[in-house]
Length: 497
Image (cartoon, rainbow, N blue to C red; front, side, top):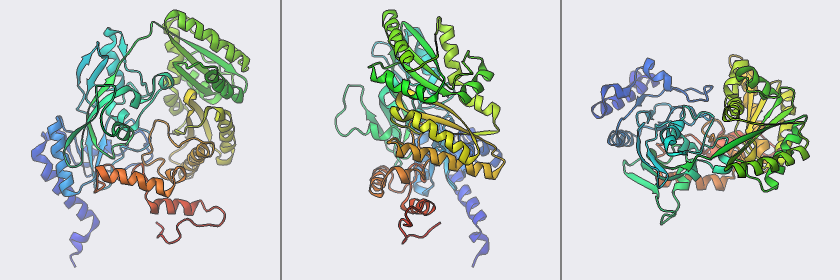
């Protein structure tokens, strides 16, 4: 028995050497990293609590280089994790043990802008906000605006189907792209979607968007652009009770009003944000709503008046309407900076991403208040209230292992409550590794098997971002073992981890 070659560390080093040797002729020297001091920045994404070192990191500069890298990994059966800007919050870009990180960070060109057709062709490494900046002189912009838009990349947005504060009126990423060019695990370059209103065949675009890098590696995206509105105004409404605030959200939509943005923050969030950015928030309110209207001056005036009436009838104790573009941006700066504000007052925070029917917002907020007592941890609540996409921020100290485990349990409790209330475990952050156990609660075994069938059609050897998003039967059995209900152990025939 050769104990030297059987040593796991030796096997990993040999595997790494094999991969690096195969990739060196294909990439510039600066575009291939494998030393620990070079690859450690890639060990996690925005979900920093979970980390894993890759064998290597490839940063191709052309589509041909990316194709060559993918073919090498397919031949060597090396798992690939596609990576954008690394701002994702679900661990979707965390490396796989003994795998390669394929970074598209160097794909950062805006290839073509068509102001007549209102489209832009961009590479996946282009920042979300850079698109709007590039087309602003045409009076256009790109509507989906995640809070991380200053840094997040369009390829990552497509992979996670990102949204933002204006997704209620303008839709998620899926609703704002026309065409995607991508590389399959075989190395074949394919295109999804069409520049026309419809495309023949199956709608594979809807499968690719939000697939979290499990089906293909994106190299080019055609995005829709929308005209910049003549005017936009924001109402900031204060409530002395979170339930009234939650019910006001449902009342606005029930009145037939679709605001450009409809966001809600609880007292803990508004106080943290106000101390950080001084946005002019009412720190004594139990909850505030930010309701934006955009369009022509006449449209905005009418909608602001209608929303004001609904808010007053719903129990708003204070209503303030932005009187200038600077004040509107100031109101939004608070909401956009909620995450860094949480980081300012807590050693760590855990951001959740559940979605529920609007009429249950108040119910979930009250349940979260009970969970704070149960887990002995604080929670700030900020969310896209208009479409029920909740972003509770659980505050904890990551250096305290017990607190981290309680934060994890707190997060799982929130997600499973969302499912119980008729919602889902994610709205825009994706599943990644963060919510993979909760997928066992959201979907049945037969539904998960269908997901695996789609994965197998694109990636038979499961090399693209494996162990993410879709749980295995064994994982769900193990999670079920931890969640025994009625004395029944799910899948008792399966071996436990």
